[in-house]
Image (cartoon, rainbow, N blue to C red):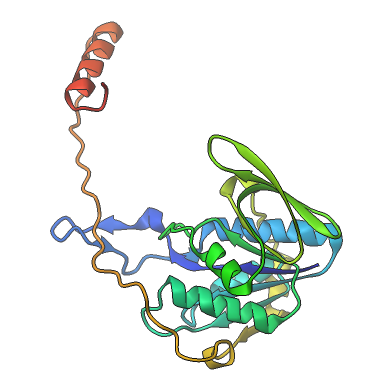
Length: 254
């Protein structure tokens, strides 16, 4: 089983602060990591490999420092990594085009795994866009994957219902965070990952022609949240009644 896992480096969104004057997010100096749900995708790939054997290739599009994050995925259990550095201000269309180009260059693959969305933008666009460029079936929001020899069965979470879907290979699957718990690599796995191949491919060797920038970010602002710091000190019944009345006045309850 040849498995490709798409991974994105993001800032740790739990560490982002908002500038009170400009309402702009402050991301300078914040640690970077692989998007959490992409690790769930890799974990699922490792479990499929443990069942069927094969090879896992992790691919990413980003700056040169993504190499350090890819090494973490190699320590988890991926066999090799591929990084492509994109043009400045690359958008979803460009990055998905590049990722699809990398997968085409890899050549032989059965399953492409992605997180359902990245934790920074959470657009949910990347997996479907890649499947469209590759011309292969896609199963999104998978909360369970059962990979068999010649087909895969997946439970797709649609919120109010679960749909079971089946596909032949090759197929692209985006997974939810609930699908598994990513493993932590041992010290020996971390040391061993240094000997695994980590390739940097030039973009002109992956895509042909000029990539067109289709999406522009006009502005990014945080949503101000101010606490009223109201403390209810009466007995429990009176406090609950007052809380409900206050929430109704604020329009929270109707």
